[in-house]
Length: 270
Ligand code: SF4
Ligand code: SF4
Image (tube, rainbow, N blue to C red):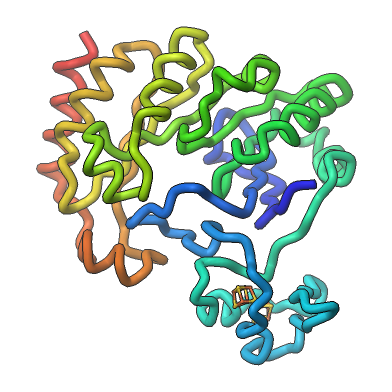
């Protein structure tokens, strides 16, 4: 079983073509600029969000919070109430159940993309899902990851994944620790490992205030070269929790700073 935060049946921003995007609940990073921090932790069933639901879509049954998606009006009052960076609006899926959801939209999509939270925390589950999706539906399978799980340990999973999209949060170890809560050793190892296998669709870096963006872009570009796309995601304060706002502020980086990063990228991919 794996805990799913949401499924977007049709997305054109999560890899090539029209794709079904599946967001898993739970992440081992706690990024300061995360814009969907409610996906970071799994619910601990404290029950505090139940009372704020205006349509009684939440209740406690056998000491667990149960969410009724038919009653829910998606007001997100429960998420605002949760102090645990979580949400009661998740659902446990078996591989077969998730496969059935994908099968319903299969004629209209080019593939699936798993994201999060951190999807690779469910690597064994995904191995089984991808095998079934490829064998029975012939769809491509992409993984959007923070690169924190050593993927050389999951050979079959990597084999079944068409392409990965990896975040490089910072190339500086201390800064990475400050931004995410973990060091960047495994991220860099995965980056090199997957590039060598030609398994990378794109690398992404969030260009955010009060980070050494130029160093990250320079050092990442030296590894990426021209082997895949390198995308800059520009920091926006929407959805960012208070600690993140204290760290990065409310303004997005200037056009001048973004252009500087782009120039550094160009100078270092050759
Ligand atoms: S998002 Fe849904 S479950 Fe949460 S408080 Fe609003 S109606 Fe209730
Ligand atoms: S979602 Fe948050 S507030 Fe609601 S029960 Fe779970 S941990 Fe508690």
